[in-house]
Image 1 (cartoon, rainbow, N blue to C red):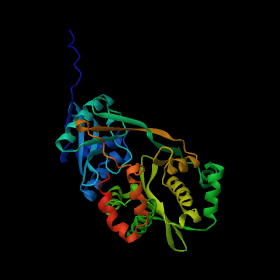
Image 2 (cartoon, rainbow, N blue to C red; image 1 turned 90 degrees about the vertical axis):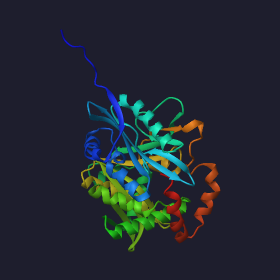
Image 3 (cartoon, helix red, strand yellow; image 1 turned 120 degrees about the vertical axis):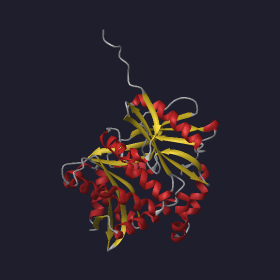
Image 4 (tube, rainbow, N blue to C red; image 1 turned 135 degrees about the vertical axis):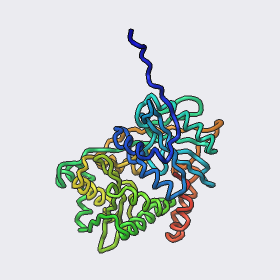
Length: 353
């Protein structure tokens, strides 16, 4: 007589340093994994900001079958939150979906132990139950295939936006791509000015350097120069055939020069030469300027799901720059001298995670 079938027990535990190699192998082969699940991302955020990384593992028979990466962010301005993952637009549980409820429950227990009143899950299977709030309409992602060559790429852009790119190309700006100290310095200067003009504090430069250092060939910086001066720049991540322009912006002159339009077109062409077949324009808040800008490029928005859990019914932390409570602060920040904004910004933005 055959013995009855007994399914392997599913267990959940916190990862320890000895698990890094196994985690890296799992993330490398898991279809749902993003750049923000990679150990390189978790370690870069931790080293640059001090937000400790935690990885919860689900195992069957001693083998990882799912995981949930997290960062514990503590800020005197924005409170404490456990986030999957810090400074990322993605995260959440990857692997066996049956493990998602157990991993999310373990995450809420971890949040309590770490005195984090809010737990944020960005993507993956959405949790349910007491304390959880799920949003599916606040953000959208934008991904589209790359074309076969430079000319086809330009023709793939809708007519009105293509005209903007052509206007920018007429200025004969230079494109520089690399990861050198000069590339990093120019990118940070442009990006810092860009976000100051938008009224938000800039992230610490250490975060950009840590990501570049750990991602190696899977990250680079593309800078657009006009008459030798950097006017637009973007730090991009490469993951499984997709390029994601992650931290990018332009100085005040960039708008008249259409430098940002040139930058994204140049990145599309560059990414194809690297073997990429998809352009991931990242996420945007629904119905914002960035959201419509990406639609103008012919990208179709795909709704993203985010979940929040709060301890003891506390309200979730509010780090949304579109929140009415920040309107006056944003207007004030836009008027700050750039040097002042660059000194104060990292002290504030490091707590946003």
